[in-house]
Image (cartoon, rainbow, N blue to C red; front, side, top):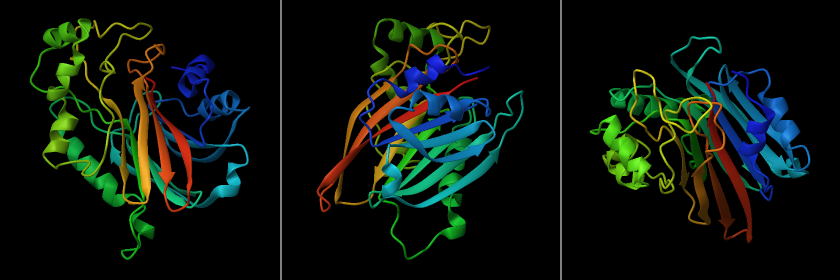
Length: 287
């Protein structure tokens, strides 16, 4: 399915007061995304770097003239298998390490294994991706990147609830009660994945699985249990950096996928440098 210019415009939004805008995409056609992003951001932002692995994509845009503040850019990818279909769906991750205004940041766009039963497989994939990315240039004496952001279709599902009770809670705007069933939060609590990472509150409705072209959950014979498969998490490992998450939400107006994109607005303030910058991070899966 082709991603439309209208979808991209909704994804990047109308407020462009961001120093850095990051877009991570999974299961999207490779041939037209960059052009659409550049057209949508032409008045305010320029491409700083991209990372591609078939249907897995990651783009970093900076405000105009921001290339003056960019150093030490590196791109990597890690394949965990799973490939097929017309757009060659790939499981794994692509990543960009970039030093912007003196801050080293790592952004990771990933797509993990599907199905509720594969929790341990997803956990294992997270660990392998973390250990493998940039391992060829890893310096054991260097400090970890002060800022790391994961975004993607992590594919963690709801555990221990059937589809109709879950949908009934969502219909009554009680989806916040479903967070106790969320596999990612459960696994993080157990210390299996994303140790030290932060995530905003899951105040938006589960982002999967929708009927394409609507805001209705799956009505196929599988009637899948809704889930927050699409996530953005971040980790700060520098006491001189204060991170404030101003928003974390889904974009319900995009209905060309069976997933709803999510976006986050993260503001970083560097105490010792006495300046700050804002970043917008968007996660989108198109199937």
